[in-house]
Length: 306
Length: 306
Image (cartoon, rainbow over all chains, first blue to last red; front, side):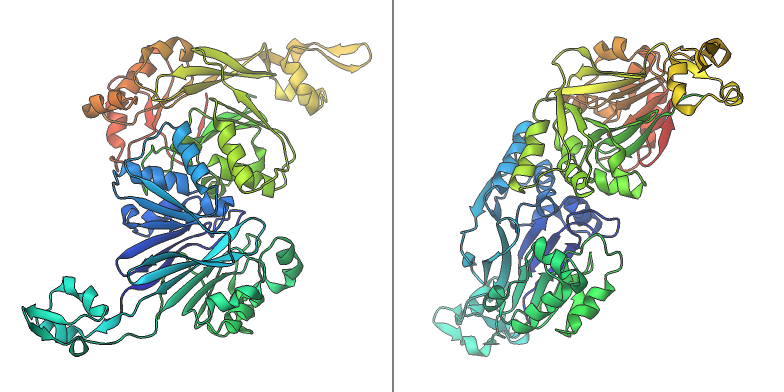
């Protein structure tokens, strides 16, 4: 009984808006946790269209402070308050996210119904920024025109997988499942236990999702994203525009494929397409020459991390 | 040959987003001039959908600094720069608009390809903020939770209407039409003139479009918007929620109708509907009890000021 681990793509566009694609945003779900990763203009409208509830997000991860990754954030936060959220919201990102949100609240004289805790990502090549029960989040410094981080979501801990039928026939209450996953025996009355090994099996290797946007082609990130089950890597341009990609600190589809192959990823998702391409099928073909298991990220689609 | 004078509605929603309506924004066209009035999140996407060119806007008028009226502004301005605009952009609004735009440019290290001139609206009940050839714009202080202005767009000057056939048969060049409108005679060769009265007729009375959003029911604005040919007045609530309207400094449909009647307007457009109403046809019925010539503003529709 594997836990939920999936990503829903909300936007695959880049800086210049198009009718076909929205700017960057995605929802990552890990068990009961739900995160928003980047928040371009229109993210809250897209969430509504895709039936994603506003208030189920525990934390937001912002890669960098270009408009196509952040301009939906002040509106989304104001909307949470209009929905009377009370639970604290965590926001991770480079310095400056707080300034934007606070300025919008100040000029609109808006008082939020909930608290925001801002977490500035350490200026380091790689750092663990969340270490919670069952999962970790890591930040990877990306080389872009401004300070920018990729994020890695990884299942964590020594947890085991539940044998559902064994648990049910032994009347293990649902709330005890997390303890079973951590290896505890089940004591069903004082002194009387069922061994953990009769209720669980060793967990499958920890799954890992890596979000790498925006970045120049940079093989130095490979050790951090190694063996990602799913890798989202930006591919703003086709390789015919390699020089333009380099100049603007972006990657090509071919380069994304090379990174996926070098990192021994299982699956590659391409996104962050330049507005100059209305049809992006060539991106998939190009990346597949380097890494066959490649797809174009589709807005509104949910990808399970296997 | 009356000049273009029309408004295209882009958003009719209010603070809390809905799937049906976008936040406030509209395009006002007066002759060759094109203005953007308010700029909620998603305005640039809506402009693309409705086929409105980004770069034809000369000036932006912002009513107030609540998110649903301004959060599309930084993205729209960044996009103008990505399209290599060079012409100066004028932005009119209360103090603070500049702070938002400049912060977004600063944190994204964005350098615009064009200059912005910010015009702070005087803190007065009524003031003329634009006095250009052929038209004027006035600001009316509205009573809302924060500093807020309605805008009045009015044809101006002593201009006359062109007799197209007479001009064409006398080979009057198109570039001279503006001078004809101002009453000049046409000198087709030195000393040889055709009298203005043979090429024009007296202009129809100056047309006037008034945009009043957001505001509590406030009859003190009536003298300023008197005899508007078209009045857009917010109606966030139906009159059953009059108390809620008052508390949040908004108006009801009935109140918008009363204002239109008292101001002797020709036509009333209702907008800025609360997200609680998915069907807004009752707004029209309610306002019509006070002012029969009322319509619901439709997103994407263009209304000619007659």
